[in-house]
Length: 328
Image (cartoon, rainbow, N blue to C red):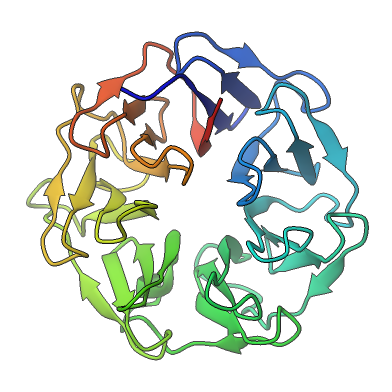
């Protein structure tokens, strides 16, 4: 069993909720994050796990330096845009990125000043204005920035975010490029991973081509097996987790898990059947065996042994869109 850790849950309409005792008791943040706002993105700092960024609808960014107990607004030109993702450069943590709807912003001085990113994202897509659902500073090279767009595929910058390239399509259907989750695997066999409504996509050539894994459908009449967030286990990159479900928001879901870098997958043994797609997952390098998963309709599951066994928290929320875990 892990020592007590902190769980942060960002919601639609219920703002930010924080538990400092592994999910037993909860505090709703009320200032400066309004208690009834929307929080869509959470990111812990790679060099300071108790420091957290949160992205909102229409109120920009907030930052906590004490595991989510206290928060402060981060001045930015984001304005009334939705913040769908946040990234921090692991090599230079004063460089942060915010993925918005559309495109995004970059700060190189910890949020004191910002640049608007001109990524070249398609102005309209099947869902209207595209959302930058994922931004990643490549841990192998801080000049390489990855962005996953809903619905416009993968973009990459090789110069820290000044110029961007739209990478090749992930599949024949536009929704193969409806990017929901994203991660970069380092080491001897590096890869870039994405999830979409179709499944789990892998690139071993830096985004130039993609191979898809399609998960089993939940019902014979389902169009596809829908995927949302994904994470890599920090101390073992062969272990990965994907949030899965019948559709969005869905009526049933699961956590798909692989222990062999995606060769084989199996649903995690959750104690209560999810009530919708499993929307998001979270872990932290400081507590690598702690894994959290949330359905879009308010269930939160926690594993303290790297995904082998799970519990469902008593507390349930309305609609969850963001999740993070930090050590105490």
